[in-house]
Image 1 (cartoon, rainbow, N blue to C red):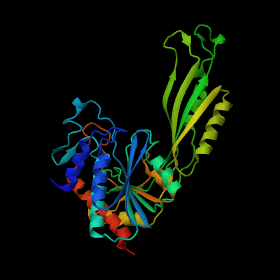
Image 2: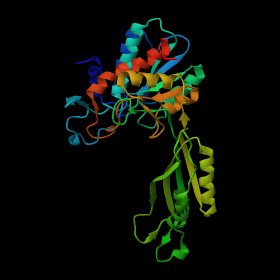
Image 3: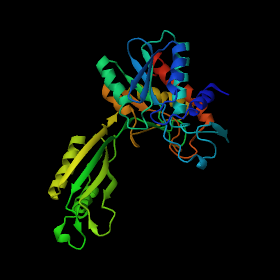
Image 4: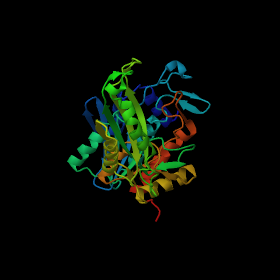
Length: 380
């Protein structure tokens, strides 16, 4: 069994559902410590974060990933136990096989190989892992980034090992992510009998015109880096459960995914102005889970493009689509951030898997990136 298949399998066997790391980071930290890395564990609440570095001064290249996984769902629906790695027809099955224990294992092996080949390398290489990426993302990389600011920790380049590829390894890279803004709305009416609507105020009826306006609004025109801003309602709750009672309150949750053509402040102001125009009695709580970021052409994108071309024989498509990643917490530190990882077609699904042939190339791909950045192999 190859080193990458063995390490990925060992991580899959650990049922590290958020935020329980199940010893994944200790396993990887021990390996990196033996390779000469300075290893630090940062605990916040129930979350474990691993910070391992080798080298001194700048430039600083950080590999970023997470050891936590989403729940497996009903185990009986899986073709093999979700936390027992199984190879069938050239595919490795298991929860986390693609998202993202393969990436974490590959980054670890790439770093071990790099410092073995280049013990006196320029700059610093690091690995940052959290057990809170699939959960609230409060005590994970968000908190570590705050600690980095306090310490003055420099980060020049950040390579995120999330499963970014569409159908083949390296066919797509994420060069940025949209911002994510959540709104939690309460509309207040007056409860009453359905036969006497004149003595009540139905918050469902009251909200409906405003909601129609919000859903049909064109929030911006997008730009070269990002598509149009999207608005989606995720939950609406109202009613007492009785069919003859007009409810007194309504709760709704919605989300904006937005690029740099809009701002969180501007979106908040426009929503609240709409609700006021419709005469609603409301309160709203906002949760900004990440600002948009975009990595321009620079050394990291160049190194990634060259590495993908050399190892995978293709030119990756740059994209800012999809959800969010922990890269949103590192980008504000001034880092160039790119996401490069396995095919994401099966992530979070029953029978999650990764192609073993592509898994075998993943450490080589990450090694090619770091060698280009820190050993002068980047083409002019």
